[in-house]
Length: 161
Image 1: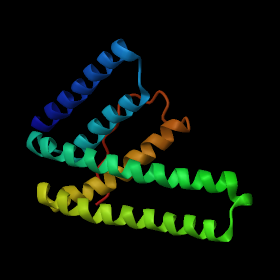
Image 2: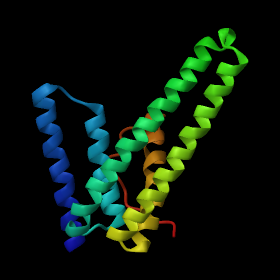
Image 3: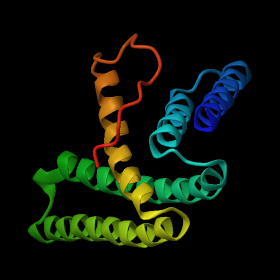
Image 4: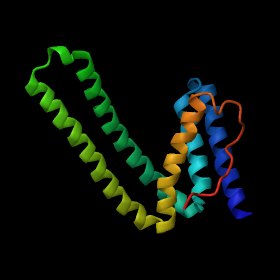
């Protein structure tokens, strides 16, 4: 019962935030996805209010750093794709080295935040987090491909652990 009330509270909070966003500066799809992410993760991970309070700032910090690496990698790939005919072998080698460096940065980030998550959550919830990230990504991909259109609220499934 307590967990159900927590999920309902988080979802209502997200809905209120979205309604203010719609009135204020127009509807923002990224805000909707973020609200869905909060509800999805909170429910799947069964976060207590105390855990959620410490988890979300750390997770949001990680997400911001991941996003920066993703943008750098995408920019690098776009630059290569758009100018590969005119690049020297040395420039291509430098781009390839940078690409691998970005992958290494992402790995180091995963290690750093794995330690942080273990310090604020039980190990089981850390593993559920990793599983939930993949589930949420798949959920979004299904929605974007049309498979999730009009399906209503997120359905709870048991974690695959």
